[in-house]
Length: 370
Image 1 (cartoon, rainbow, N blue to C red):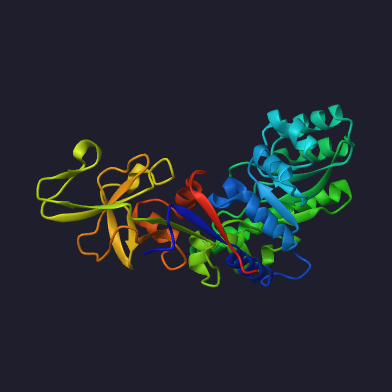
Image 2 (tube, rainbow, N blue to C red):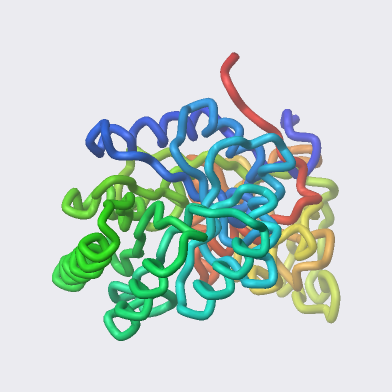
């Protein structure tokens, strides 16, 4: 029988420590580290992750939206928190909870200056997002003059940092494009620095940028998914260890005769004698319907068991005809040996989508050496 008695997401903080220290070893000791903990720490638990990273003396944390940063503050996190895509409606809350906004447009710049002025503060730290080629959000050459003029005209804010984002730093076929992004960022940053008369922190590197482009390390580097050991960065560098394992247990086993069906809409009909196992996890837990009908699989006793029929809200069924197993045995969705990237790729998606879909009702179990 398995030690796992229910569906759990194991969070291995020892692996997180390893990944953090490994990535830090790839940059100069003077280069700061920003850890991205958005989307519930990429599907794990943002508060657990942030508290551990704070113990490791991380320099900065980052989230996508203000609500995520407020959650960290309410949990007692004191480390600076960057909000990567703040919305103007939340600017007053960002100020109240001492979060740092990434300002990305003339509109958001003016609105944040108004909010800071209303709050009767001055020199409030902001990071300015520069568009060096990803073309999502950020200032470019076309509005640089207006940006500089606005910054110099107000005492409300101070530019703590300039940042940009690499689009394809994990792809060896896109080196020319990536070097061009680094060049564009330098040019934009130099124009701002020469105009405002002081030098903010510069940061552009993501995890694969840390590993592949020392030219882009600047003053601070960022790592999100790399700290968790998932995705393209983990495939590129095997030193990174996945921090999370999604496990469950076989609840019941049924034997089906030819012609019998499984689940809603009779989506699976046995063509021959079949053994199937029911597992207590479903699309309400983050296993979407796309994994059904043999588009996804789990691991039982080191063998693949394909999901049959439609994924239910609270359960999935898998084919165990050729697997020696019993009720109560452990079921692995992903772990350090069976990567989330492999599971997601088989189903036509990416590990980020699989991981961030894991719902709060899945129990989080922390693993850490004492």
